[in-house]
Length: 212
Image (cartoon, rainbow, N blue to C red):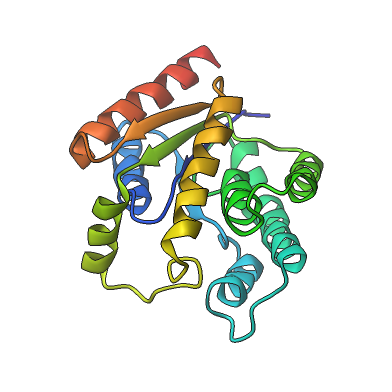
């Protein structure tokens, strides 16, 4: 059975993940690759329903329930979309995956509480699938805020959180990257144009394909 490549884009709000998702699909498809772009929370029909609850639901969930709901959406996303696409040899590029749960719920909401980090790690291990490579996109918070304001999209529950929360999330992503240097590549999106960042990511992805 063909072996695909599972790529994830990670980072805080407003760092340019959506832009890169679009550019990567175009660039890789133009080179003849079969590409699936998707997102979390969401991706599959059932997971998209859970996305609405998580991001825009009227009643906030408790922390443990929130984590479990993210993983419920993720399991459906994997089973319905990601795993079949990889089995067909596609390149799957996902906007957020388990690193975001660790950063937002583990470091952001739980402030690095060891029991919560352990819970997320155990749930992650039960999925049976990690990304092959992750690109952590980073930008200063003031730059990210300007990008979010220019986007004009509805503001979700996490984007409404205070600056202390966002600082913890960013620090969480840095710690996750430190612990996973073999998988995660860090890219400063404010230091280069979107097209330059795209070229760097495409080059790295093609290198992974060549080594497979």
